[in-house]
Amino acid sequence: MEIGYEQWHDGIGYDLEAIDRLTDAEKGEVERMLVPRAANDWRDIEALDRLGTPAAIQAIFRVRQAPEAQIRLRAHQYGPEPSPRQWEQAIVAALETAEVYTGLTQALSCAIGHPSEAVLEILWRKVRDPNSGVAYHCAAALCSIKGVQDSEYDDTHRKLFLRLIGPETADRTHAVQELETLLGDRP
Image (cartoon, rainbow, N blue to C red; front, side, top):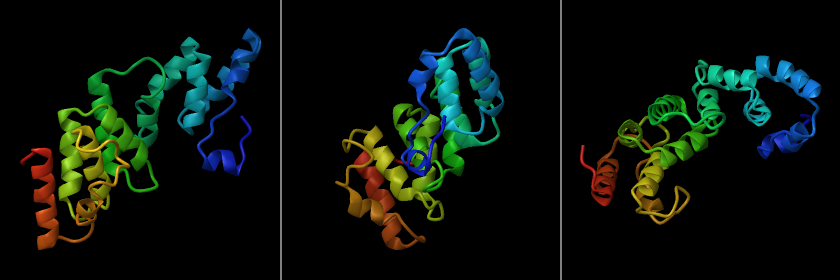
């Protein structure tokens, strides 16, 4: 469980294989240590998932109800598969508050993997809102979902996405309309 700055920065988790080598008694100790901290870090949730005990799974279910949307969304990636409705609620809540460097990448990745009507609706709302600060990224996710580009990192439509950044202008309004036409979506 010991990680330094580089492991933290690069998103490297705990040594999960070590869990597999533990005795039952040691697994019990790990469970007692991780369950109370489950909502602190995705690494703890991942380790609980690997542990797989009933108490570990219950801790994951509790984190899925946590107040912080980003950790709640992360918990949906572990344990038993959530229902489509549970995914939708978690993704929408995460997208409501996600910003660049604070969970946006994870929220968009989950949105692309689970593009319900509610998820598409919030992505469009963020694109159309000049104050959202994430219009570029949400437009890229929409293009990925609709199959207009290979992934949210494809820069084929970068010039269009860049026009979505900033205050409401005639050019920004036209960029939104161009994106609607490109994707075949109209409000």
